[in-house]
Each structure stands twice: as C-alpha cells, then as structure tokens.
Amino acid sequence: MTEPQRADHQPAIEDVEVAAYTFPTDAPESDGTLTWDSTTMVLVRLQAGGRTGIGYTYAGAAAAEVVSGSLADVVRGRDATTPAATWAAMHHAVRNLGRPGLVADAVSAVDLAAWDLHARLLGVPLCTAVGAVHEAVPVYGSGGFTSYDVDRLCAQLAGWADAGIDQVKMKVGRDPRADTRRVRAARDALGVGPALFVDANGAYSRKQALAMAESFATCGVGWFEEPVSSDDLEGLRLVRDRAPAGMDVAAGEYGYDLPYFHRMLDAQAVDCLQADVTRCGGITALVRVAALCDARGLDLSLHCAPQASAHVATALWHLRHLEYFHDHVRIERLAFDGVLEPQPGGVLIPDRDRPGHGLTVRDADIEEHRVR
Image: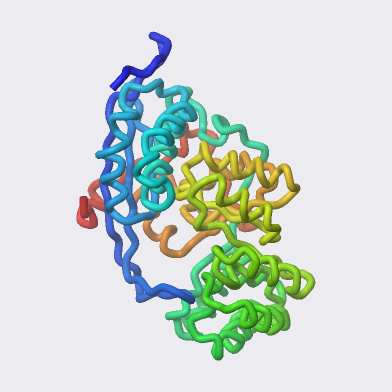
C-alpha cells in the first residue's frame, strides 16, 4: 500500500494490537427484546513515539478480526497526531465490507485509541484534545433488567440514588402486563426526588407504547427510550407527538453512521438523540453527530461505555447526560486502572492531571477472559 504522507518530525503509528475478552454478567440479564449472560469487549492498542493509545468497543469478537485483517495495515505508518485523517482512511478502506455493525464497532475502537494516543503524545488530557466546553458530565444509573425480580430492581435503583446519582433507568417491555407494576414499585422505592427513566428497547407496538406512556407518566417517568423499534421513525414520531407533557422520547444508540442520525433527526423522531461512541465511528464521528444536534438545538445523550465516553462528552455543546450502565461499569473497573467514579451531584469529572483518558489496562486481571 502507499505510504501515507506526513511531516518527518511527526511520530508514525508503529503497531496495532487487538484482543477480545468475554466477561460473564453477575446474574442473567434481559431487556424487552434480548437476553444475555456475558458481554464481549474488543480492546485496541496503538503505539507511537513511546506512547500507547487505548480504545475499545462492546461487540462480537469478530470485530477484532476486522481490526487485524482490514484496518491495521491502513492505520500502521500514519501520522499519530492526525486521528481524524486516520479515521477517514479507515472509512474509505471498509467500503466493501459494509460499514454498519461490526465494521463500525471496529473503526470506533481504533479511532478511540488514535485520539487517546494523540492526547498522550501531546501530554494533555483527552478532554483538552477534543475541545472541552463542560467541566463535568451528568450521568444516570442504568440497569434495572427485566430479569430482575422487584426486590433486586428496587435495590439497584435506590442504591444509585443513595450514591448521589439522581437519575436512574430501568428496562421494560418483556412482559407489558407487569410493566406498570414494576415501574410503580421502582417509583415507590426511589421516592419523589430522583428522576426515573424507562427503556423498552423497541419491544412495544405503536399503540402499546402510547398506552404505556400514559401509564408510566402517572409514576413520574420523564424519559421513554425506544418505545418502538428505532427503525420505525414514523412510530417514534407518533409516540413523541402524543406522549404526555414532560416525557421525552429518545433513541439512536444503534446508529453506526452519520446518515442514520440525519434521518432520525430529519424525521423529528426524538426529543433527545442518543449515540454510542464505541459504535458510531468513534470520537471523530461522534463530533459530527453532535453538530447535527447543535444545528437543531437538540440535546445529545451518550450511550454506555462510560470510561470511553466521559472525556468526549465534555466537548458536546448540547450534552444531556451519559449512561452509567451496570455491565460496562463492572467490566471497566476490572479491565482498567484510572477509571472515573461518580462525584457528588451524579457527575463524572475527567482527570485533567493525566494524559489521554488516563486509563491503563490491567492485563493480568483480564487475561482469563481473553477469547482472541
């Protein structure tokens, strides 16, 4: 392949490493449309100038094959100080693979590593490198799986509230007949203070979603995520238009490319857009998604992977919050040193004394979970 153009004094990316790890959940989990008992992380490391950049995505182990088989040769040798140019090269290289899905996951992990490497080479925190406009990132506790009995559900949500996270989310949609009872129990456990969100993961039909919105509103629910499939833009718009006052409809976590988000916003399908930096194409792509929201004066909420998301979240003008997801919190605490923990007020505050995102991999602790 043609050697990428770069100034002689700029460090080149010397090596690309990728591995996949599968971590069991601490209990069987389910939402409205899926059940699972493990989660796989694909971890990428880039080396240049004596520094290592770390990025990752939550995806099937096949995403690691995309990195090693299709992206590594594209990335190796490129200027380590221009991560956006590296992203563009990857974007062009995967044209015939089909960009959405696993390919976008792989690109996201490499892009995150490229930005982390860039910041470490500069000796600055990642939030500085991406252009922070916020000091702190509001989070909401997320879990409340449909596989939990009511006691475990309420204990988890109340635990987040007691820890100072005053926004919490639970799953619904597995058994619509039980959903109102479960949501009411959660409301009673939380009391009147903390905000309560629900996430159906697209499990309801349009008319079910409308009926459930009215029912959930009596329990003070102010966030209804994926009431219908995120592919049903007309259905999302219908629920958004008819939902009770004070209830926002949200979707977007399954967006893998910019046109997806453009279509959702153009359809006026959501009150708040969601995006996942480990799926949408990484930091380089996420800032483009944020610009779409900025142009419409619409908020953006980041989905999951809190340690990968926290620094870039500070650079989002219309940031709403970041999902502090139970599974990913467990995995990231095990996999990394330097993780950010929620501070009083329910926020993550990037460590500006550490270069990059400040994470180091705990290789010995995760080796037993390695699958590739």
